Amino acid sequence: MRKKVLLLLAMSLSMLLLVTGCGSSSPKTNNESAAGGTFKVGLECGYAPFNWTQMNDSNGGVKIDGSGEYAGGYDVEIAKKIAEGLGKELVIVKTEWDGLVPALTSGKIDAIIAGMSPTAERKKTIDFSDIYYKSDLVMVVKKGGNYEAATSIQDFKGAKVTAQLNTFHYSVIDQIEGVAKQPAMDNFPTMRVALESGIIDGYVSERPEGVSASAANPKFAMVEFNEGFNTSDDDTAIAVGIKKGSELTEQINNILAGISEEERTNIMDTAIKNQPAAK
Image (cartoon, rainbow, N blue to C red; front, side, top):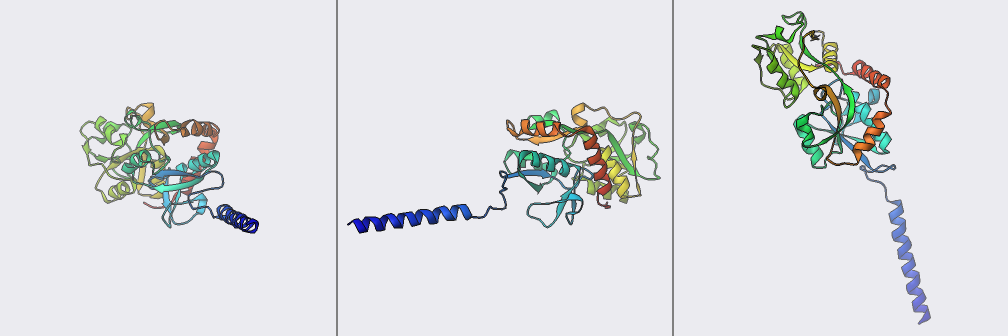
């Protein structure tokens, strides 16, 4: 009887060691990091110099989840700093602009870092961090065309003007008297193609994208105004979108507070320099 008990104890101990050994040696999945999980960030990867798609990891590019492509740009560099501060692995989830907020609220992503402005309308659905960039509105036009010398938005009377769908950029076009407002377009690469082909005379953008567009294509020019669009601070500011009530908000704000204005400017200058030379 004693031998039988000892045998059962030995077998139980062996099974316990086997289970424990399997548990401790199992490899981490792709969605785990040693520091404590992933930080999934949604962005278009098509709004240079804030974010773009490239084919390799040059200049600090980060692999896009589920793709052979990589993401680069100002937003990606900010996302890196936040992920590092959180002690998490950065995962870039390429998402169409209209899908960003739904992806956040559904839990598909943890944050939106995509050149998004913390407008009053968006704040009804999601929270935002403190501002991580602020810019002015410009118009991107054909170099040498009728509108390159414009100094006021009213100089675009009769012009065919558009902006990105579901952005405040599109709504401010109504401030131009007599403008030929065109249907909104899905993304900036599409607007650049439309501008070069003559479908539109110009599109509303923010200064970094305007610098980026004119640098990438010598046929484009960026118009800055003496008499520009009326906007609010929230409209021209850019912040991280976060799920309502998330504890990430305070953590991200603390990390952003540690990035000096000089460093942010250097990051943007580098992003403009490194952007892909494409339309």
